[in-house]
Image (cartoon, rainbow, N blue to C red; front, side, top):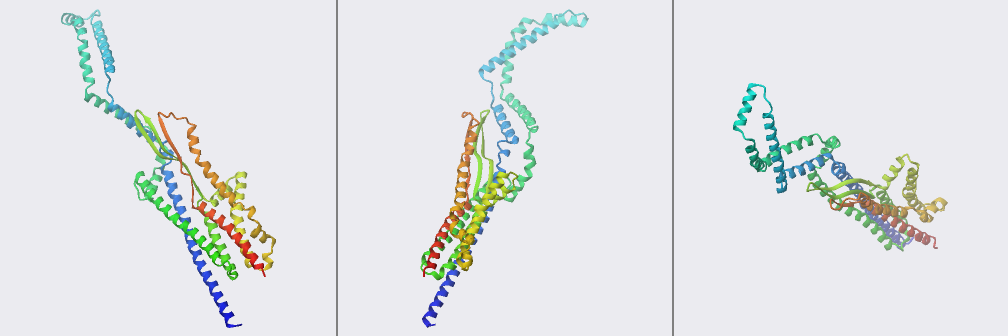
Length: 440
């Protein structure tokens, strides 16, 4: 062996080890980014579940307590502002005038009845002598005017308002929402976890936390994608160096495994259906409800599989098994087969089962179908709330509704797509490098 040959082998070995070390660092970074994406996704799920619980329509739009306070406040405001109109005053004065005339007539009717006792006869004589019925009747309009002046005094309106408020408060104490009372301690425990004492404080902290989670998640997700791009760029650099094919491909398979694991276990879609705003008008007062949660679910592919398999319906279990096979087991088997076919001896490389999964299984892969299915689910849920609310036929003059659906795809979806594309690229690379190995 010549010195040049030895030097060439040493240089080749050093390049090989440098490549392995460099790509290993990339894999460590990718793995760390994947772990952070998964952790942040779980944290985001907890934040949104807490928000959905606190803002559930059960404790807002459908809560007796909320409506009780709103109705009492609206009724109390109307009572305090209420004043008799001129037409009502005139009508009331007529009623009072008629009532006083009736009372005078009834009183003299009683007096004019025949009396049997000496005292009764004396009283009757005194009244006839000193009291003139016609004069009293003539004074009735004056008494009516004085009564109306007393009734329409500000102090009288104020006193009536106090009495009405007392009656409303008594009615309110008899009306309560038992479901809210039963969950009050749960609500308080949610607030305490966030260091808040009320709903407003909780929402502020929750929104701030979610904003930070979104920023961090995007940064780590792009970090994972950057690692994949770096590995593909390395393939361009070493495309003519056959001695580096095997280690680089095996490390590429490892990076694809990381992508797949994160994509399968990280939230792929969030279904968040809520009424963003509903404005009602009651007794002239606007009553507004915001962010009324109707439904929230956050699922990864693994979550969906487990959920379907746990149901007792055969059709759901069959769907769960299909997703498990084609979106979980199938990709793992395909990646494993590509690695085995490249590093194993001819016996394993030519095994029909391994050869099929390594080179011919692409046409049966359901990964792309799964991506389309998730996308169609996303699009479908976008129209659920508007179409549902439209069936209630609200009077536009009384109710203004703005329905929204915060359903959105999550990092797991992006990472899963990246795995699908990356898997296709690796399959193409495997076919090319195996052809070059066969060239003599």
